[in-house]
Structure formats: structure tokens, C-alpha cells
Amino acid sequence: MDKPKYCKLIHISTDYVFDGNSEIPLLESDATNPVNFYGESKLRGEEACFSNNPGSIIIRTSWVYCEFGNNFVKTMLRLMSERTSINVVNDQIGSPTYAADLAKAIMMIIVSNKWTAGIYNFSNEGQISWYEFALAIKNISKSNCEINGIPSSEFPTPANRPKYSLLDKTKIKNTFDIAVPTYDSSLAICLNKILC
Image (cartoon, rainbow, N blue to C red):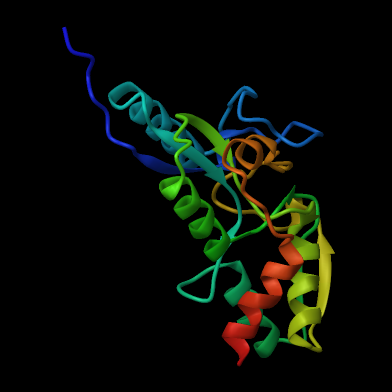
């Protein structure tokens, strides 16, 4: 009997599949435990991919932004231009992902001869809080807006968010020979495109 054929599917997932209780960068093999419906739905998407297409590649990413659409970077730029001070949570830790870097990594996987099904993490290098991310945006954009760090308890949101979701990128780097830029270098590139 012929073996079933599967397509080369790449599915984008999220750090929200984790509960945020780790204190070290998360591996692809770490236990999942979503704390909100978005994370739960993304985890079900991962399971559906592997159930229907075992040859799938899942890429978990975090804090995605770019010069297009609505995202944290563009929101911060807008708020910094409208207000003299803003509050940003300082106790949620992870790493941003410039969408162009994620797209480049996906293209490198597609054109490589190393298709290896499984789960992979991808975000830019560096460990920061949302507050530190906002400070980096302020510094690069030369804004005069004051950024205040506050705990998540003072900034309630409709959905819970993981406190710590830094992703370990060792597996994707070693498997596909992918170089991962630092968050600050990629942020500078994106802001240059937005502000110029």
C-alpha cells in the first residue's frame, strides 16, 4: 500500500500556547497550557495541522509587528505623538518579532532541502518587557513622551496574557541554518521605514 502523501504546510502559531510560568526560554517540547481563548484556539490549530498533515511545520512566534497594519509599534508611535506620557506593562517578558524577519525565515525553510516536520520557535533575539520595548521605540524615534512602567494588575485586559513567553530559537537556527537578528536592530529597520 502506498504511503500517504502530505503537502509541505507551514502554520504560524503563538507563544500564547504557554501559561507564562516559566523562568527560562521556552523550548518547543515544553508543556503547553494556554491562559486565554486565543492561545487555546492556536493550540487546537497546531493539533489539527499534525492530525491532518503530519508533514507540517509549526512556527511559534511572539509580539509580531511591522510597518503595516495595526500593531504595538505603530500604536506606541501614535500614542507618543498624542500624549506627554503613557503607561506600559513592565512585568510581561518575551521578545518582539519583526514580520519581515519571520517572512525571511519562512522563505529560507521553503527553499531549503532540509524540510523537517515539527514545531519551531522564532522571534528576534533579546529578552525584554513591553515597557522596555516601548522605551526602545521612544529612543529610536526620538520621542519626548514619558514612558511609565506599570504592573499588569494596573492595566487589565479582556484576556489573560502569559507573564513570561521568551522563546528558545536553538532548534530553528540549527535545523535550517537561520540567523536570527536582535530585536533592536530589526526595530530600527522597521522604524526607519515608518518614519522616513
